[in-house]
Image 1 (cartoon, rainbow, N blue to C red):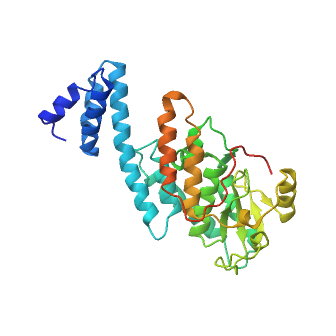
Image 2: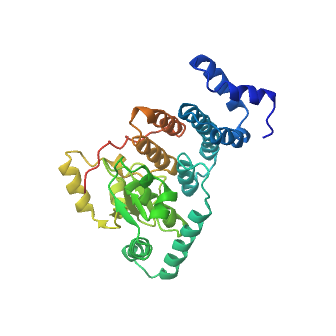
Length: 304
């Protein structure tokens, strides 16, 4: 953006010690939109004061955050919320300038390799074995429990790059591939877990009165691709002393999945200097509230 007199004057005031003045200056700079980011980056490079650099970094972040909010709002208002698009929006919170092309290429490569191994004669278990084998053995994706010391394990671009993701991130890739290949796998709301369910192919999702658990062929741990039986799930519910209510076995919408991702990702930013990131991520998650909310997944995860 060509620097005019107002921009020049605003930049001179960035170092004003009066927080109220800086607040007014910040808002005016933000009003210019993303086009002013190169100017701010140039100013950062020519600034020796770490304090002023931090203020410039915060301004750039606010500009990216405003753009991200608009992008997530558009995604939320779509008739179909594409899960890959939602995961990329979440990743851009940390990596606003990332190129999505490599993610698309790797997802397509995985889809093609799985598709080549599938045929109409495979049982549901055989289909899942093919998908898991390509994802965890051929692509060498590693899975971890959900933790908050490694933010990159939530983000699909870093997950593809490092081949390491937590249960939520791995589950999202599993779901993306399942949808592309017309395999009826959905995420469900098991307490303290992110678990996938292979629903029976003839199941009518519009019927909400029946026990969803028994509409599942089996369950899948996205950390490793391990398959769990109904008995395994019943044992887990007994261990956590929770009745296996039908609500836990209803498929989660893509909107709900991205909301869970944002909420859990926000817990990576508990340090005081990063608290603003936690607040922003929770604000983004709040954009995705549905009319009928399922019970929130508890903070701590337990092994099945």
